[in-house]
Each structure stands twice: as structure tokens, then as C-alpha cells.
Image (tube, rainbow, N blue to C red; front, side, top):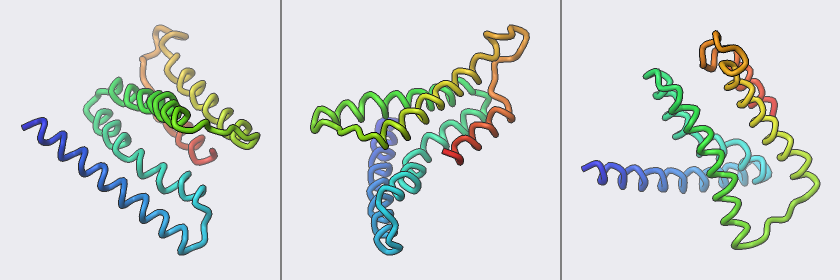
Length: 145
């Protein structure tokens, strides 16, 4: 029965992603918004929603490790698997704009996460957790990026 739920979930995710991308393209065309901007906002947030739900529910149940693992695992998958497969199919051109914009943001996000997770290493009396201030700072950095 669990396999049936898994299969149903995968079908629903694929169908939802298809509707999301089709709707986003139609919205972009209707309002004459560049597709790149739609890709950065609506589609990026929409495809991250399942991860957000899993992380949120994990945090509510006191399973912070699951939330952090979900975020880190998703980012590793996106960077290495997706870019790797795409590069195998067709080489990906790197422009100055990509390097100037994407590389610093990716490195900064990784460094911020490492700094937030290093609390216990720097001060053994400090509890190992991501607090509200760190969460607010990460949300602010997301909005600013």
C-alpha cells in the first residue's frame, strides 16, 4: 500500500509541475514578463513548495535534522545531478552575468548555512539549533537575492 501512495504522489507531483510551468508561461506571455523572471520566481518557489512542507512539518515535530538534511540534499541534487545531466546532453554556456550573479549567491548561501550550523562547534554550551533570528536573517537574504 505504501508503494501505491508513493506512486500516486509522484504522479500528482509531475502533474502539478506540468500545470505550474504551463500556467507560468501563459502568465508571462499575458503580462509580457520575460520568461527568465517567471522561472526565477513562480516556478522556483512552486517547485520548492514540497520541500518547504516537509521541512515545516519536520520542524513542528521537533525533527530539525530532517529539515536541514532536506535543504542540503535538495541543493546538492540540483547542483550536481541536474546540472551534470544537462551538461551531458548539451554543454552549458557560462556567461559573465551567470558567474557574477549566481556564483556569489550560491557560495554566500552555503557559507551562511555553515555559519548558522557551526554554533555548537564554536560554543559547546550553545544548543545546536537554528533560531528565530537566524531564520529571519535567511528569509531576508532570500528576499534580497
